[in-house]
Amino acid sequence: MKNIFNKAFLALALLSLTLTGCLKDKGFENYQYGINDPDTQPPGVGFPFAAKGMNGYGLDVSGSPQTVAELTFLNLNAGNPAPADITINLAIKSTELIGAYNTANGTNIQILPSTLYTMPSTVTIPAGARNVIVPLVVTSTLSLNPNIAYGVAVQITSASGNYIVAENLKNLLIQFSIKNKYDGVYNLTGYHNRTPYTFPYQTTMHMVTSGPNAVYFFWPLVGGVGHPIGIGPNNALSWYGPVVAPVVVFNTGTNLVTNVFGSDPAGPPITMFTGAGSRVGRWDPATRNMTVDWNYNNNPLRAFFDDLQYLRAR
Image 1: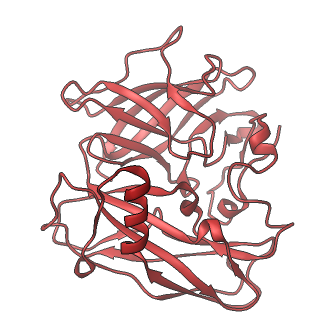
Image 2 (image 1 turned 135 degrees about the horizontal axis):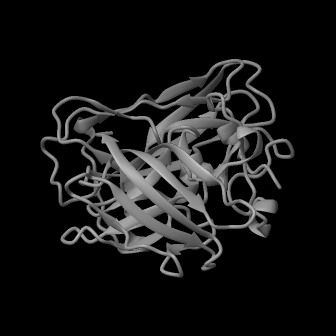
């Protein structure tokens, strides 16, 4: 059983739990999914979420500042913590990068007006650390149209010392939309039917807006997208890594789940599970609880059965 916890994420606090991964998948074994092993590569810096292309993020309707933290952490991709402060320069490249994304994907994401957010042009990974949060603050959403998606693109332009900027992790694209009704903090319980990893799981999960009728799994325990496999021997909470993280799509009229897909295009295919033992996926407007069954690799023996109890607004 291979520990597939990406070293970029190991820098984040994992409370008192030990997380391991157990996916026998060639793409994971040869680092096709995620970042190459920094022990064998030149030391560099990058945004982990840049690998996903576009990242959805929901905002409240508010005249107060909202800080985007879940997506904007910047990692040191090296085997050891920074021996000295590393200065990293950033630039807003929304016009070029959002425009190119729209052209390539047939989307119509509008540029978020520069008067509505702030972001530093320089950040520092301090000596002894492995990452830093880039504080992107949206100052107000009162003037935003809830039916329009807005985008910001941040580029790493340089890093001090001998650190290189990872080409595939330098451009972070974020699509903002007003939070949908499915967004929130939930208590996730469930199980995975893959033998012998049929352990139950229970953990706090953030379901984050990704458009008007979709949410993705953001696991605060690991500081990124992801989904548990379960509690195994020695109370180890296992997972398949950040590339196995579903997006759940609803019909806003019926609140039924209409689709489930993977948030990382480099990961294994994820689909709504409709095989033996599956349930009707839905969101209950009375309780705000959610039920969703999904699987990966189109394999009925690689299914997850999730119950999400709504706790509070995110």
